[in-house]
Image 1 (cartoon, one colour):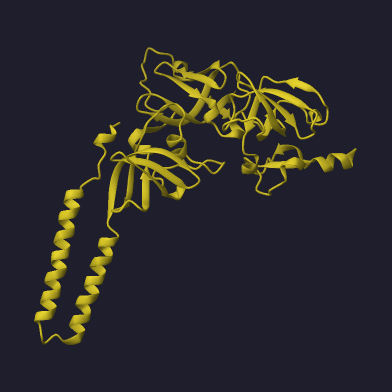
Image 2 (cartoon, one colour):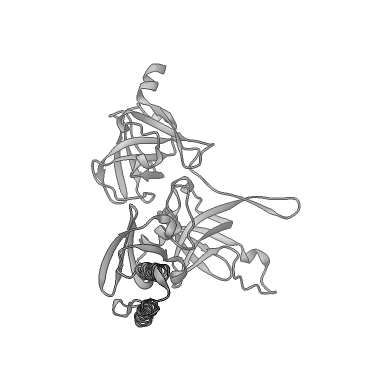
Length: 354
């Protein structure tokens, strides 16, 4: 990490020297072309073409900034360099060493927009005027991609099973992953929505991957639980997903201490749910999609019911490329053929069935 006063544009003096040398070369080339009276118009045309080419390359000169990335949202990267803040358009494809998620977001976005207090160093390639971004790397400067089983210090006197990672629930969405070598604390709210299943209080053998910051903090990307030990000794792991649970639609009525009260679109059923699995900021009056361990009969029941597990999605339209009108939706179920998407049931469909 570095302080803002230490941030600077790399090799600016060298680049200015290079530019002066190139400009000098252009002047010499022009002088040589003009001094040769026998070269005619063709030679003059070549000189002009060379000048234009050189000028074009100077305009396209690039610099590498050592900066602090402070946010990436809606295709805009905000960063600080030499105590000045910039916000420039940048396609997510320009992130270096990146990994894409099912929901369209990426590892680099998760690193930049982390909520664990990490200050993010970034290597950003821009034009000299810092008006256009050519690439951005936040993966390499801040840590490394990590998967269980990497860099294990295997000791002969330690049973092999001690190197299997064990899962322990701490509180809310926070879990501890540990083996004989290390302990990692992970917030499962960092997982994509389809992976935010009902995890057990403990599990003796799990595999996982994510991003490990240099200070030991961790962003989890995926986790799989042991489901079988095969006859040949190999192991089968599977993710724990939300695919078996229906999603309901409703409006946030009140927000309490780690809970929220949501009234469903039937306008009579009220659910009190925990908020530890939530992908954004909750506000009263916000329209949300909420995944619950319940049957679809909850919709229209008129009950007031409390749940100990819920996954709240603050932007339902993000999961609905068909663009359903929110108020017409009753519930949805995961599309088994399209990960991260849903099959929707509208209120009108239920009324027809009844």
